[in-house]
Length: 271
Image (cartoon, rainbow, N blue to C red; front, side, top):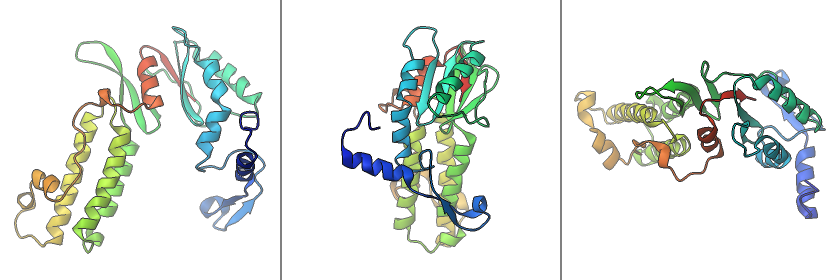
């Protein structure tokens, strides 16, 4: 960082961030809070960690992505990345990568690092599920949609807001909170082949809200007769999940765009 930043105050702030002691609580510390000096690495989960990783691994981007046809392509976010290469090149590329990192004081996470033939096995990256599928026209393509774990996490969040224990909350407080969560999730995952998943999430959310309102107001009519879908959206302000494909989005997400450009007919090596 000192080779790229000349501002002493900024360098002092970064140095203090890197040397801040590590405090562990919960299972990892045996149920007892503990701490120790941080001699190496960026703080796990720290807001500055992605920025420092981008600065430190910027050279790796240039060394891998040579902008040449049929060459490996790396898609990276902070210290999580996938390298896309042609069949048979994965093992050699991994050895070169490991040597590059070791020369700079880094090492691969052996538990997460693996070689995958994307044509036979899907991968999970940044919350997305990537699989190789055959379309109706007979041509194969990389299918990208929100991963099952990402959907489950969102459903859990919806249940936290809409359940029997929250019936006391005002509608004007619960639904805006729900909308913020849905908008944030859709804003990130509305990409590629997410239309089907977005529709499923929309149906699930409407069902949960309809049941929550039915219990809250003590309706005597059947559940599905209380509030129509249009009423949930127009009257109560429930956010509408996107129903069109996310191909023409204006967002410039490095990971999806890179995977779209380089994911055709290549072997994926997620690292």
